[in-house]
Image (cartoon, rainbow, N blue to C red; front, side, top):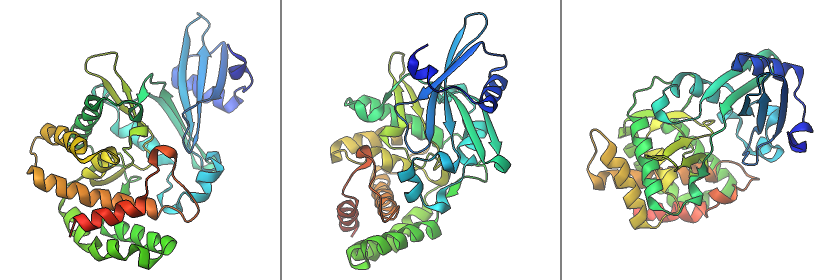
Length: 316
């Protein structure tokens, strides 16, 4: 066991919870911060059992006090729900064929503000690190299959509807000025009309390439979306919009085609692409309305105002 593990001993409560979800006592345990942590505390835990068996897993602490201080200051209160990701793993991601991380167990104790997840340590590469378009097309196909799986949404999920979309626009205007958002606001109600006609399904909510792990040593590749904190009910194309941001138009069309061809009842291609632009516009508005004093991580860093203006012009 490395010094990095030994320097962070487990608390008695955490050890008890860990042994309960794994179903047997451990002879030694260690922990260290996981290098790909985003907003909530994420640690890699190594467990050694009496028979010498070693097991590695991830421990995610979804309590508000575990948030990175910068994320805690910027995360809107109305999107924070600590049991949401726990509910997703407990009720939606239970099928082996999905390829998502195995959930070994969870703790949800509001009285002690304790919201813990114990997950499989998936060995994979973040999608944004892969330049081969085939991997992105695989991620789009996974998304289409997930959107068609007919999951019943737990009540903790966010809801993407006209009211929530208008709320993001109002926040964006308050942070960046109504004049700066005027071209977007002029098209926003038309965008909402199109989004309202799209079928609602369970969506990841932040299906950005930094939240998709790919393990390519099998056939087909294993696609493993992570960080389901913003899971919601809404148009599936919101997820596809997140996936395709940043690509040149031809490449984005190929990724969108992979999604469309996987659908049992695909819409006309031109309709899907128009709806996809509407979803891209709404995502840009959401980034603009996230916080007055916050910048997104490098993998999400776009000029979202310019993106919103460009999309509003295209949607004339």
